[in-house]
Image (cartoon, rainbow, N blue to C red; front, side):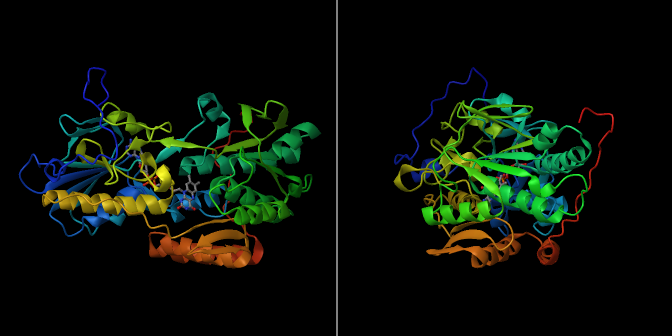
Amino acid sequence: MYQESHTRKKQEPGLATQTTAERAATPTATGPTRVVIIGGGFGGVDAAKAFKGHDVQVTLIDKRNYNLFVPLLYQVASSQLSAEHIAEPLRHLFCHQKNVTIIFDEAVDIDEENKQVVLAANAPVSYDYLIIAAGARDSYFGNDQWAEYAWGLKSLEDAHRIQQRMLLNYELAEVTDDPEERKRLLTYVLVGGGPTGVEMAGAIAELSRFTLKKEYHNIDTGDTRIVLLEGLDRIFPAFDPKLSAAAQDALEKLGVEVRTKAMVTSVDATGVEINKEERIEAGLIIWAAGIQGASINQGVADVAELDRGKRIMVTPELNIPGHPEIFVVGDTAHIPGPEGRPLPGVAQVAQQGGRAAARNILLGIKGEAYQPFVYKDYGSMATIGRNRAVADVGGMKLTGYPAWAVWAFIHILRLVNFRNKVYVFWKWMWDYVGYNRSGRIITDYKHDAED
Ligand SMILES: Cc1cc2nc3c(=O)[nH]c(=O)nc-3n(C[C@H](O)[C@H](O)[C@H](O)COP(=O)(O)OP(=O)(O)OC[C@H]3O[C@@H](n4cnc5c(N)ncnc54)[C@H](O)[C@@H]3O)c2cc1C
């Protein structure tokens, strides 16, 4: 817990000093070992599934009642898919796994002394082992006031807000007499040249250049200005430079302005400032530039070390140094990787980490030594609209249609439920034929509002 009075010392990560006996946590209650998991995302769900058939009582706590397929959020934000196609109720996911209990609540603190997770609305939950898999949130690098105007894309609420703003901007641009205001409304700035920024920029380009083209009679939606800003010297810095160049080329063919070495130095309600020297007036600013660990990480900040991104530093076995009963996986963990760099914040790391933490807990219950987590990188990919993608899979560097086909196949395969797989496949094929986007409904808008 993070009361000021707590004085226990942190231990250095990567400890070689932990013995098997220290690692094995002693269950405090009779009956099955109690494992509590905070977060039903990629890491938490895979961890919970790994306990299937074991004499372990799992409590999965999530502030949402669903598991979200985050990689397709941008398709909800750009009106391609609806929320229910990329989200699955956690209760449905675990309806056949009787040793999993789900609590729909927010974890607000962790009391390591009494081994309890403190919840916002319900009584604390006791654990013998805890897995923190609470994901990440946006980081504005010390400029939290920008969050009001530069919107992140981490949740369905974020996606809905972005989608509504885009649709509204076209409606307002259609009726305004002010050319400068029309230009501003039709300018979208995306901050961050990683997969989220690139995929979103490509999706907005297709929406404006093709789908909406014939629907407005006073404006040409094809004039929408889409600016992608990246502080480094190339987009997709985590990819091979050839794939970065291919992605930039594909974006530019869609009319996206790609600006590298462009640092955002200020954000306000009507635009952004770049490198302290240039201003772009914008009707929508999307923030995809940085992430930090989940807020629940503060709950263990007195016993664990947090890195600069507020992620919890863990041992190679994925537990907090000195706390063999607390594991941390996924985006909220700083997991040591090759050359001292942390493993990337991607779904594969979270899923494999969740399963590895569960394996170690099962070893701990038997009194055996934990095994270090070995991450297997199966490759990375991102799409830039139809027929355009980049993929680095099994040593092969793909671009264009082959990369897009691999991307589409893998994403459909990874959606959690059969109904969603069939729907998304059908919807993508339908959109492929005609650039259709059926989910373009503005809701909850009051015509006397300031907008
Ligand atoms: C827009 C976008 C696109 C992406 N695209 C890709 C991609 O194409 N490929 C890829 O591999 N990765 C992609 N990622 C990254 C990937 O989504 C993450 O690495 C992955 O979701 C991390 O899994 P996780 O389990 O750590 O966290 P999450 O999947 O985010 O799950 C965290 C869960 O914890 C819950 N939670 C948080 N705090 C609390 C609390 N205090 N109490 C209770 N519950 C809590 C949340 O509600 C959530 O359900 C993308 C990310 C984003 C934002």
